[in-house]
Amino acid sequence: MRHTLLIIDDEPAQVQALEGFLKKKGFEIEKANSGLAGIKIIEKQAVDLVVTDFKMPDIDGLEVLKRIKSINPEIDVIVMTAFGSIESVTEAMHHGAVDYLSKPIDLDQLELVIEKALIHKQLVSENRMMREQLTEKFRFEQIISVSEVMEEAINVAGRAAPSKSTVLITGESGTGKELIAKAIHYASPRNDKPFLAVNCAALAENLLESELFGHEKGAFTGADRLRKGRFELADKGTLFIDEVGEIPMATQVKLLRVLQEQTFERVGGVEPIQVNVRIIAATNRNLEDMIESNRFREDLFYRLNVVRINIPPLRKRKADIPMLVDYFLKKVSGENQKSVSGISREAMDQLMKYDFPGNVRELENIIEQAVVLSRSEMVVSNDLPITVRAAQQGGQKQDDLQEGTFLERVEAFEKQLIDEALEEAHGIQTKAARILGITERHLRYKLKKYGMK
Image (cartoon, rainbow, N blue to C red; front, top):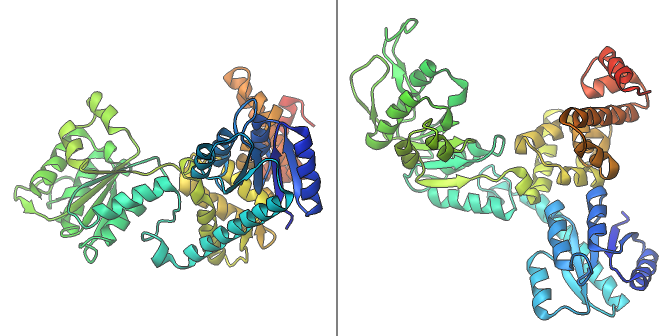
């Protein structure tokens, strides 16, 4: 595979010399005469390695390095410096630079440094595969992660696991809060006892109380027999209360009592029931804000918030995306009897640049769709949903989507999606409509509305 190198330097003679040398060595070369120009190239296309000057007129090499790592942590960066002190080089290495070179550049040394960086990249990839295969050794139960922010959350979970303390897990939907809760349970002394979960957002108020605490026969219409609640069933084990911010105020009082005294009564009952249950709660809401607006009890919050674990969104832990992609590829391929075993560099680059509003759950769905639709043993860019590919468009298309009124931006985005679907379908409207998830009649209406051919 021909590797793509980006050279960022404001000295034309330096760029020309490096470009000529590296092309002879078989590399594809991109070049930029400033840090910001280099960042734009990174945003628009796949690059394997960046060689950047440290001192430039707009932004320095350290800032270039930080921005590249925020866009795609998989891209390796080599820093060149004629002016940098030991401190600046050390700081660059601290922020993720794989190596540095002093000017004037020794081309033989440059080749060695690049070769070392590419070998490092390959070793990281192979290590990722080994981590995927040796799950018991490299993962905290079913959690796949190498990113620092996620490892910090897992570390807190691991330290909390052996205790009896209540845990509050916060984070956006789809980040894997239940996985963390299960990991805590199965790493705890209660791992041979029940782990039960209840989703508070999925149940009406009267049903939620019965689900948590159970009910006596005749407690309400339809209660034709005694029913144990989740607290009783989870005795000596763990109860995971998901979306705890959705619990009505009246039920919050009963939950607070269980946390304080480990006792409760079934709905319609008067006999106190003693339980020994560890509570792990989760929410995607800001409970502090809910307390301010009198929608969540402050005393309950402090009872739940003994150990707090915040799960970062996928856009804040992009270093985990390649491992997650590898895992989902194997999982989905096996489930669907497909022989898809890899992903192209361009497709991976697009995934790395996508924000994933639905987090890990959305990534899994994207990979499932890509595997199902793939016509080869490798997922390519066209196998990804059009929304992922559209999000990567740079230049004028993105500018168009940022200008005008809200409705004008919506129309611009809609036209962009239609354009891409027609291009992918080679102008066949039936196929383009299928890609967009609309009827052909609806597509013809949109084409006419926007004056598109």
